[in-house]
Length: 318
Image 1 (cartoon, one colour):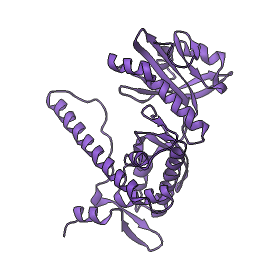
Image 2 (tube, helix red, strand yellow):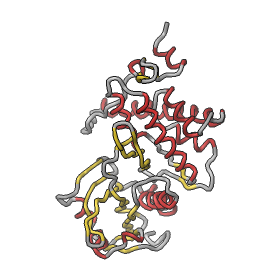
Image 3 (cartoon, rainbow, N blue to C red):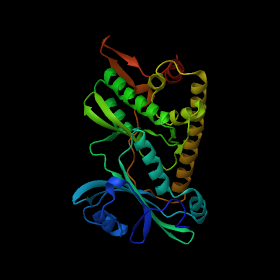
Image 4 (tube, rainbow, N blue to C red):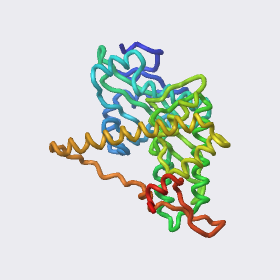
């Protein structure tokens, strides 16, 4: 099973692939014991859970480079059987990142992946990329803007333009992300009002296609969370004009279906709590309530709503 797919580098008990620029003896020697790397005092946990993101410095060609390692958790035998045919999450993430990097479509510079199989069971798998120092998620950028008093419209316009341009380039490169939530979009702030270097992460669910249909594009767009008026603005920036009705129709349908999934997850979470399960994770800060969302228009010196008419009617009944 471990030999399936293209042949690659060997680092200790692992197989995998490294990008040409990072194929260095000192890095291979360090990668031979990944649990020791992740447990080292210099390693810093960025995200926990079933899959962990760990920031650590690694020696590459005699100098230390800051690397983000995604350590994927052990999964069921059924998923191992499926991944033995289509590739592990680490391998799929590498393939997607290499494709995006080759097309200049935006993702942290991919370094490589490693995996260790025992027969048909995947015991360890890791994806490595350059750490995007100073980047913030689209989610955090929005929260920061909503914290402004009052939020300035020009900042939202610049932020949405950066995201729309990045998603359009990603789709033009033939990549369907399939999990394009606000937290999976990274941006580099260049000041209080501007962003650049759109990047996407968490790529293992993605698919590479020769050409994306309107339905596929809509599926990605439906995962971006925004007030309805800003969402319409993003769609027009993405399309560079009025989007086709079919794109908007599919986007609304996928957003509705995703909303049902969220309700299902909340129900399961409540059931687990009722049965006595306890979460140790800190609560995640949410966006302001729809009734509290507005931005300041500098040109007219007045607040403007962020909701379309149907949402305004729902939240502000006569």
